[in-house]
Every structure is written in structure tokens, then in C-alpha cells.
Amino acid sequence: MNGIPRLTFLLSVTVLATLTTHAGGQEKFRSHEDLLLSALNLTGQADGNWAHFRSTSLNTAKLNEQSPWYPYVHRSWKRWKIGEASLGFSEAGFSYAYNSALPSSSYDDAPWKGVGSNLRADLGFELDWKGLRIVIEGNFWYAQNRDFELVPAYDGRSEDHHYWAFRGGSIDRPQQFIGAHLLRYNLGQTALRYTSKYFTVGLSTENIWVGPARFFPLMFSNQGEGFPHADIGTPGFVPLVLDGIDFGSIEFRALLGVLYESDSFDDDQSNNYNQILGFTAGYALPFQKNLTLGLHFYRRKNMLNFPSNFTQLFDFTNGGPTNTHIDKVDSQVSVTLNWAFPEVGVAVYGEYGRNDLALPHAAYTRIDHSNGYTLGMQKVFTLKKEQLLSITAELTDLFQIPYNGASQPSWYKHFDVPQGHTHNGQDLGNPVGPGSDSQILRIDYFNKGAMYSLWFQRVLMDKDYLYHLTELHDITPPHPDPPYLKNRHPYYPYALLIIGTEYSQLMEKWKYYLKIEAQLHYNYGWWAKNDIANIRLELGMSL
Image (cartoon, rainbow, N blue to C red; front, side, top):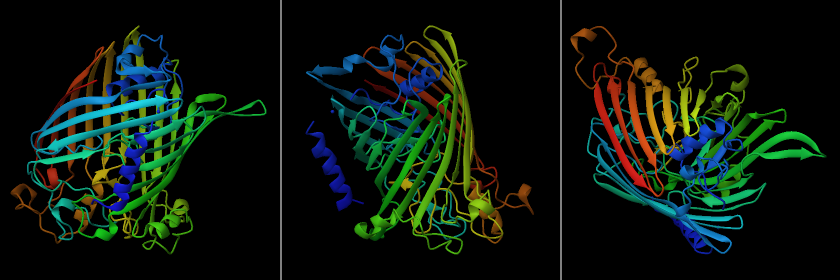
């Protein structure tokens, strides 16, 4: 997986980073600080709309320095003034995680947390100067990666590490990375960015988050590793005023990047890279600035020949009613809505998307074609001056039902982009993965620098694959059919039930946290009564 395109990008970022950069970066997605800023924004204590396109090198939420919450979110001791420039730590920390029976990771960017012990160390520096911002940040991570019971390839067409090579293409999403005692390094949130009042341009390997979803965005999240990309557009929402008339606010960010195949996928060296191109556009109404609409369009193409392939990313004519399996570009589109009511601390939001845009006629004749959605609501209560209670409920569904015997594209999978919507074997979008649905309820209590959290989640795993199994009546289950299933189909819905809690404390110089999850994999592998319990423990400390 080491190649010239990857090496060239990493060297260019490193060289640029030695030359010179802000006014504050975005806190890591789903971190204590990020969750607190979200709650403050919803109660009107932080300024500005949350952007539909968020990156860690650009802060789109502003917190007044006079706010009592400011010292907890922006710990100023981490930065030093050098004339007009500012130098400081972007990240410095260490964490340990343990999974007792099955792998489990959530919003962890690059590190993959397998069975057994998992270690992570981060170190990063940032330099800001007159709108120019440079972040050099990387992490080392280790995974003991003990063996566990893999879901078998029931139909004999897949390898066990990739059991889902069935209808709807393939995807680079291994159940287990190859090898024990994995030790890896990546550039993490490294970025070079210039930002002015109405314009931003960046080159980075950072994670991005697209859309208003708190847990289940369809396009991009930090569930997996960030990928090398360049982006250009507005720094969040900017006012649209023409001849003194307020037309609301707009947001736009275009992206061009490269995705890598994991070592676990295949031995074909000709298809190791995919190009990705797309944009996010947002609009806020002039008479209702807290109602924001978003349009997100992204497409991928396998990079067999970069110079000639690149132009095809901009060709929007391929695909059509008679071109179901020969389109060489995989496209996704979604629309989002976020409506906030700061006076009562409530926000409702949603996202509806199509996974396969190569069949335009399906947009008019089949509303269910390759669709997926996320819906959610957040309520924040202001208890006292420095106490907040946030309650968030969210649900998502990516299940696809075959239509008239035809192959229905499964989310994030494709035929001609065989790695699907992944980078280095990890999901780029919705953490629940292809064919799954999930519901979550999370409660966060903020008391000055402390955060106490409790959440409940249910995931019905890959219903697309379950449907595939129940269509194939001649396949053999991995275990003998127990008596109580006599004359019944051996495959059952596979559900994951989670209850978790977290304590996090922001101090003057340090932050530390402890997180515990109890997970029950009910009918693991879609085999009845094959239940497996997993305990996930994680603790960490950082600047």
C-alpha cells in the first residue's frame, strides 16, 4: 500500500509545514470540548451556525472570552505568542482501551481497536500567523489484535475477512486487520490552511464531518482515518448581502482527495487508490437564520491511470436507465436540514441520501432506490450558570430491499470502485455500516469542567446481508441446526445492544476521561442464540 501518490502527498504536507500559520481550530469531533460547544451553541451561548462541512483545522463556532465556559474549552496555557504569530500544542495525549471479546471502536479516527489491549499516543503542534494555520500532528497506535470468532462467508463467495461480497458490489471493510500486535503511525489531523473572513483553502489529512447529525452522518465522520485531500470554499456560513438586501447566509466547500486500499483487501496492485471529488453547500434563510439546509454530493473513481481518470470525475453524463453496471464512477448525494431554537435549547435535524446516483430514472420512479436517512433531536437545559444537561436522540437506517429481483446497491458498496466508501479499510461515513439501522439516546451533564455521560444504543446489523442469507436456502450454517430451530430458517437478525457511560474532566492544564461500555451481540453472525458479550474499557489523558 505504499506508493508514489501517497508518498508525494505526505512529503508535500511535511515540507509546507516547515515553512510557517489561526485563530483556533475545531475541537476533535465527539470530544468533551466538542460536545460542550454544541450544547452552548444550541443555548445561544456560542456564536455562529455549525457548518455543514466541519474540519479540525477550522473553528466555525466562536465562544466569547468573557464566557464562564471559555477556560474549559480554550486552555490558553497551551499557546505562546511570538510577535504576531501564535505557537502551541494542537494535541498531546495518551490513551488505553481494552476489548474483552470483539473489536469495538467509535469516533476514534485512525486507531483500530481490536480484541485485547490497545494503546494510542498523540502529539501535535500548531502555528498561526495572519490567517495562515499549520498543524503538524500524528499518532502512534498499537493493537494486540487477538483472534476472535469471525462471521463466516456463508455463501462461499467471500473470504471470511470480507464476508459481504454479495449483491451490490464489494467493500474494503475487514472484520479483523491482518497480523497480531499491530503498530502503526499516521499524520492524523496534519493540515496547512489559510482562512480569511469569507474564504478558506486547505491541504490536509484531517478528518471531516459533513451534515448536522450528531452520531450518524451519511457522508463523512471520524469513525475511521482521515484521508489526504484539498478543500476550498467558505469558512462556514457567510452572509449573502446584495445591494443592501439580506438574502441569508451561504456555505460552500469543494473537496478533492485520494483514498487508499487496506492491506487486507486484495493483492491487485493496480486498484490500490481511489479519487474522491465533491462539495457541500448550505443555505440559511434571511428571516430564520437558525434553519439551515444542506446539499452534499461526492463521487469516487478507481485510480488506475491518474491523468486520464481525473477528468472523468467531472463527467456527469455517465450512468443512465440502461447503464446499471458499467458506470465507472460511484456517486452519493444527500440533503440535510437543521432547525435550532436557541430560546428553548432545542434542535431538530435530518439527512436523506442516495447511495447510487448512476440511475437517474430511479429518482422519479422509486423513492426507495438506494436510500438512507438519519433523524435526530437535541434538547439542552440550562440548570445553573455553569451547568448544562443535554439529551440527544437519533436514529438511522441504511437497509436496502431488492426490487423486482434486481440487485439493490448496498450503502457504501460498489462494483467498479471495489473498496467502496472507505479509506485504509475503515468507514468514512455512517459508523453503523452498510445495511444497518441504529437508535441512540445519550445524556450529557456538564458541571464546569466535568462531563458525566450515559447512553443506550441498539444496532440491527447489516440487514442487507441477512436478506441475502434468507434468499439462499441451500447454504449451510456454520453450526449444527439446534432442535428448537427444526424446520425453521437458521438465520436470525443480528442485534448489538450497548449501554455506556463516560466521565471526563477538563482541568487547567490537563484533560482526562474514563469510558466503559457493556455490549451484547445478540445472534452474533446471524446465527440463532450465538450471543457474545463484550466489555470495552477506555481511559486517557491529554493536554
